[in-house]
Amino acid sequence: MYFLGLGVVLLLLKWQEIGPVATWSWWWVMAPFALAVAWWSWADWSGYTKRKAMEKDDQRKFDRINRAREAMGQKPREAASRRR
Image 1 (cartoon, rainbow, N blue to C red):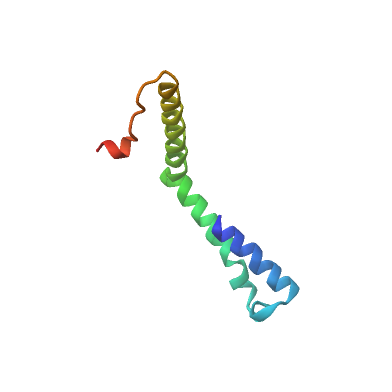
Image 2: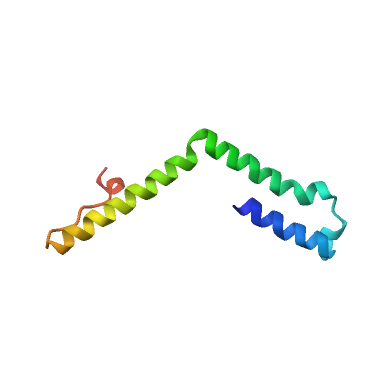
């Protein structure tokens, strides 16, 4: 996402001819977009995206269980990473 944001900023600077970016080649200005595509391709191919989504779901489930335990007056469990 950082590459995409950087690409948009550089594109706007080049389009408005602001600062040193106005003299840069279009290849340098468009490079962050190519890097964003490469990053997203790698993240999907390697399973990084799915793993992060699963970690987020697991944390939400853990938090929900702890809230239920606290509502029943029981001591909440520690996070899985802290138990090791």
